[in-house]
Image 1 (cartoon, rainbow, N blue to C red):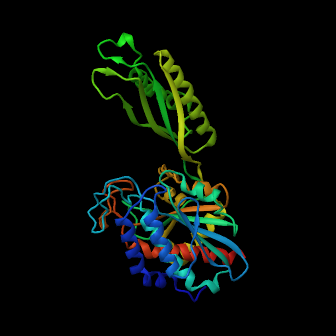
Image 2 (image 1 turned 90 degrees about the vertical axis):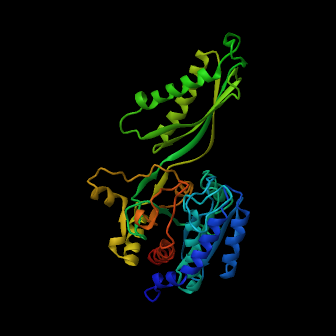
Length: 408
């Protein structure tokens, strides 16, 4: 592999990746409704000589190599956007009320760049590289859907890598931050609490059962879990993000609906929160003569990073880019005096893959305030620099080929 200049080849593919990224950014789609996105990515891969295979409801898979016996290393990019109206001001901004505010257009373009490098060197791949183009990451469903459709088999995946770009960070573009072994992202669960009351005229509350009053007390009571039932070391967040009840100021409605999310790094704490939410919601509602039902929507488990794979990938990226552009989360924590954290608070549905095969997550700096990328992910003004595309594609391709070479 020493004769392959991954960085130069990635730079040669820069224009292709920029065009792909700009197209995807200008035409964002959400969830599993990615018909245009999937068609675009499929054509790009077919033009490179691949035979893309549909996987699940809106995923795509291709393989590179397979000409020499060996293991299978999977590299993943997500493709879905967010239901956010864009305010970034870039020339290729979307105008359909959706936005690639999390950088998934960057991921898809980088993986396309890696696909081109890998296709050019298939004879040198010591095993097989599987490329995963995933839908519905933002709703925590795409990865699980693809796994159930056979993603990790035929051929069986032995290890997996994902990259996530970062904006608004104080690192030079292209700096990689590799997660250490262990949990790096929390489990996530969305929930809905429906409070059933009895509607009536607002001037005669004695004739009804007010679900809004019950909802207000439930919101307050749920904070008791964190304040009095969790230890200092039990990291968890419970957030109520929406409240809906009634349409008129002089009417007490039949129902009130609360919705939110919980984030936990431990499965026992995750289950404790769910159990206590149901008990508290039901009991408080009952105290106000109402009833409450808690239901859970989409979610994902904790993201587990394999310690051995973390060490391998860190070494490979330092070979590729030099030690000054690759750090582990533990190193950054130590450099900050131990006051930071090695965990992300944002969940990631690549977690489903990480519970099946050894996996690793790494972050890639894609612009800070100096590059006009001051806003973080999910913000309507978020920007990501095209300058990160080449480096990201090289990391995808190089780490995959080096791991396969080392683990024949």
